[in-house]
Length: 167
Image 1 (tube, rainbow, N blue to C red):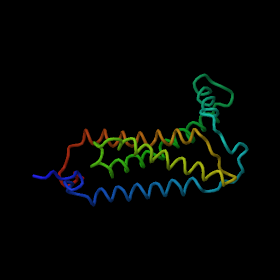
Image 2: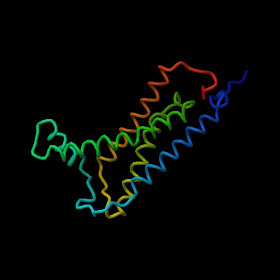
Image 3: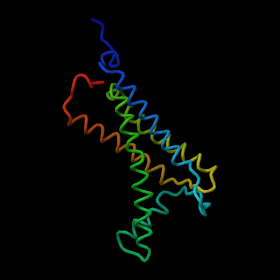
Image 4: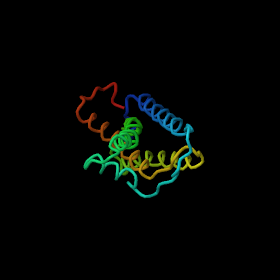
C-alpha cells in the first residue's frame, strides 16, 4: 500500500489554513503597529550594538540607580513588550505547520520567519524619523517567536489529542 503524505492524512486541513490566516493577520498587526509614526523624532535612530541600551537598564534594575523608574519602564516596554508581541506569531505559525513539525528544519524555519518579520519591520522603520531601528528589538522579537513555538509544543504534548482537531 502506498504511503500517504502527512498533509493527506490530516483530517482537518481547514484548521491548518485557519491557523495560517491567523499568523498572517498577526504579522499584519505587528507591521501596522510598529509602522505608526511617533510624536518625537528619535535622537539615536539606529542601534546596531546588542544590549547597548537595555544592558545598562537591566543592570540598573538589579543593582539600583538614580533613574530606576525609567529603567523599569524601558525593560517592561522594550524587552517584555517586544517579546510578547511575537509570541502569538510563533504560536499560530507552529499550529499552522503542525503536520510538518517532524520534517527536518521546520522549527528553524518558524524561528526564521519571526526573525525575517522582525528584520523587515526594523528596516522599514529606518524610513520613519520618529521610529528607531534597534538590534535588541530583533533579538527580543525572535525570542518571542521561539517562546510562541515552545508554548505550542508544550501544549501539544500535554493536551489530549482529539481526532477532529488533529490537523
